[in-house]
Image (cartoon, rainbow, N blue to C red; front, side):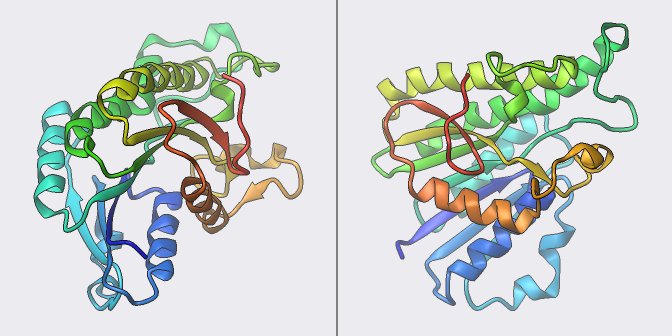
Length: 253
């Protein structure tokens, strides 16, 4: 296995934690993989278990907020502590609901405050990471950047409506990634952008909506992590943005 540094952002999500454990498992006790995880809550990565690992080295970076200043500062830390070339970046941010907002079922539910909150988490914050990481990642070494989006961000696949803020935030992220890929094809040909739909994963994000999930379509975070790592390994650096589901199949934009 090549020497590599892998960065996981928004690392307190269930899929991010599963990615970390899967990468560590795949490293097979070799000292050729470094993980850098970033989150507002890094307690999971400060357990004694991680300090005793003979394989992947896990470095955690705690941020207090995802402001642009903190993102810029965190990227400088990444550049400073990365032991190897960065080959993969996973941006795992995502908000569907919280105490302040819920997915809208009708137009009357639309709130500018909730929309701004969802857009900030799902679109603006990942874009700021891409903005500040690109100069660090540009070079001759191939690097895949995966941004978690969702199938409901597909405009052409929207048959049910509703969920206005969440759908719009993911569709906007897809447009930004598509535009960024056009630019990177000129100035950073080594970077591949992937918009990833993990499917419905058993996590706090999906918990209120799991009763409507068809049998066999509610995935564990471990299952999604394995699938995602396989997808990244088999996706070519081609100067385009890809919109893929957990099976590696293309989703219509």
